[in-house]
Every structure is written in C-alpha cells, then in structure tokens.
Length: 124
Image 1 (spheres, rainbow, N blue to C red):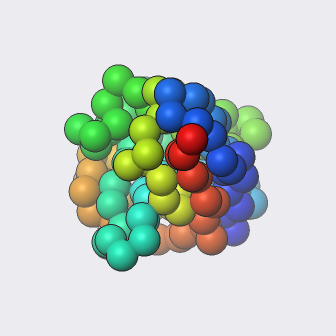
Image 2: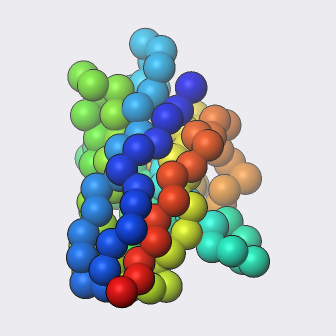
Image 3: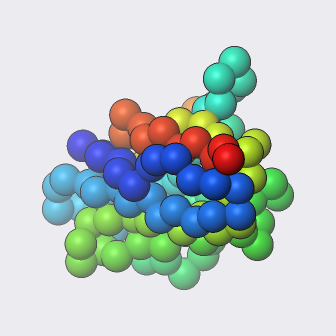
C-alpha cells in the first residue's frame, strides 16, 4: 500500500515536499516513481529513483526544480518541489515497480503499485 501526503495550495515560486509511505518489508526491492495528472490531461512522469537511491531521473519540465529521494529505513519516498509554477498543478501519485528505475521514465505502464494521489495547487 502506498499513501501520499503533503499536497496543498501554494503560491507560485513556493515549495512543497510530498511524502509517500509504503507498507511492507520489501520497500528496497522496488524502484519508485512520482507521476502527476492535471485536469483533462494524461498522467505524466515526473521523477524516478532506483532501489537504493543511487540513480534519479526527471522529466525535463521539473529538472532543476524537483528532487526525488528515499529513506528505505522509513519505507518512504519524497518529492521536494521548489520554484513551483501554476502548470505544476495536478494530482501527484507515487508508484512502485520491480523494473529498473530507468525504465520508469515516461512509462506509467510499468508501475506495479499506485497510491491514491495528493492534490497540489499552485495559485496566487
């Protein structure tokens, strides 16, 4: 089970940190990803991280602004979002997969487990 938290309303230029808590003992067996879906749009890849955090991948639209990280001791993956823009408004989902993290890039179809999402609204 994956449970996201940390979403909310933030002004443009602001920051938020999303968390995703996973249940179970095999968290480190999974690469993790963050995806988002804006109203009327398809779900899109945001970021991915390898099983032990040594490799990270980002969508071009968030590169340099967002940082994905994980704490395997806490079974938690994070998404630090800085310099937020109105176009970042979306429901953000975390997901887990048994395939290598580089295969997650742009590919929501490879994810095995999904959270229910947390809403991020960037507006003044």
